[in-house]
Every structure is written in structure tokens, then in C-alpha cells.
Length: 130
Image 1 (tube, rainbow, N blue to C red):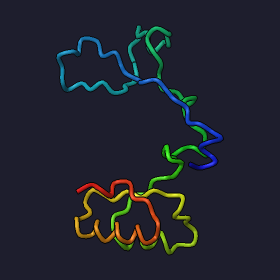
Image 2 (cartoon, helix red, strand yellow):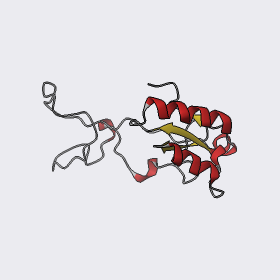
Image 3 (cartoon, rainbow, N blue to C red):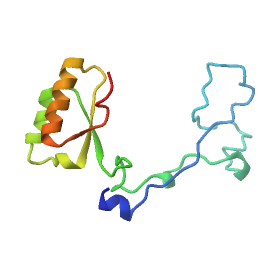
Image 4 (cartoon, rainbow, N blue to C red):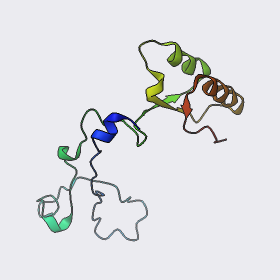
């Protein structure tokens, strides 16, 4: 685990759901966040009993943004040449990244990438899929 993760911990935030009044039977209205715009809406006025709204205060520090629980960053890789380029690039420290193979990568290329990653001691997150 990274030193940064041990020193700092990511903030948690509540689930920002919208009280979609009268929408129990409407499947098209998802329970995701929508800014309240009604003139008498209690949530817009920030009444505590209505629950929290997303605000900038819930944002994590710059050091922690984009870091996974393991303390590493995630990089999506689409091809063998992309993975090879990351390893050969002196500006990128490959040991600080976890790699995920893109959805469209074929079985054959996945096998090649897994073999290459094993030789280079790289961690591929979704190596067992497909």
C-alpha cells in the first residue's frame, strides 16, 4: 500500500438521491442526482431533514483523486503497443499503475498482454475476464 494512502484517507460522502415525488411507478425516472429547482422545494433550501446535496466540500484532495484502494492509479490499455509504450516510457513509472484491459480487446491479445505483464511484473486488474 502506498505511503500517501496510509497518511491520507479518502473522504466519504452520503448517497445523493433525489426524492422523486410520485415516481414510484415510473421506470424511466432513475434515482440518480438531479438539482432541485422548485420554488418551494425543501431540498433546494437545504433543510437538514431532506438529506445532503453535492457540494465542492465533498471533493478529495488532489493527491488522492484518481487513486484506487490499493494506492495505485488505474490505466486502461487498448493494445499491446500501448502497454509496451508505458513500460518503455521513462516519464511514466509503471509500478505506480494498475492496468485494465479495454472491453474490445480480443482473447488472443489478452493472452499476449497477460504474458507480457507477468514478465514485466505489472498488475492487470481484469486479467481473469473473458
